Image (tube, rainbow, N blue to C red; front, side, top):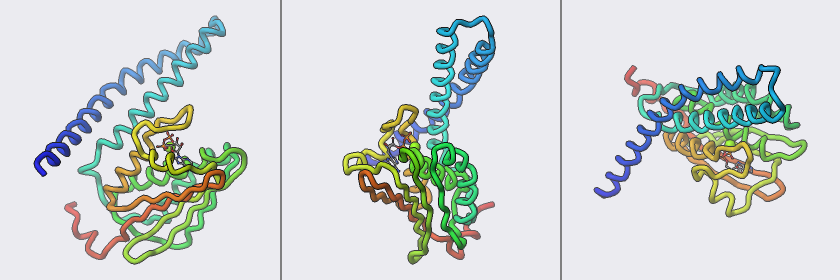
Length: 235
Ligand code: ADP
Ligand code: MG
């Protein structure tokens, strides 16, 4: 038990350090990015120089993406908690991701027709839905759809995010959420890991059902808000 506690302390420390380092690295990255963009406007560049600058730029974007994912992961305590309507958050998230879906020939069908109140951090919850819907879109080759539904189950709300994408086999499912596990050229392999952490913070559950070649259904179970939840805050 003592070893377990020491381990948790260690993970916390590593998390704090990662956050501090990520924060410090972001500034020089921004400076370098500014210069690559400046140089790209130079008309005397050769094609080779141009493509090198483009590569530098896309790698910088990638580094920034990794840092963003880590920063959200590290911050966990002292996050503001408030009552959230799942329907409202999902509607917002769909609005944000819609252009990306259109670009990828994917139709998003949001089937929520009532409110479900949960208690947690607004931006975390939005981030979880965004990551999951984005994965659904990215799993689809050609035309397809992502369908979002929800239902009340006892003290919980179950939210389904179903896609008509390529699906995953058992091995792929078991690797889901492992840091840096990605099958995408532009992936970070951090999205699902961050979601697992956030869902855990919300005292929720994550479930995945998938059929290779047919699609995937992600089910996120979150505790519905109880009467006392609001008063328990120290605001
Ligand atoms: P990333 O999206 O950056 O690759 P994630 O942690 O979000 O990182 O996902 C890890 C991997 O899990 C993806 O690269 C993909 O192979 C697989 N995956 C996640 N969601 C789905 C899905 N809905 N359908 C098929 N594969 C998925
Ligand atoms: Mg992802």
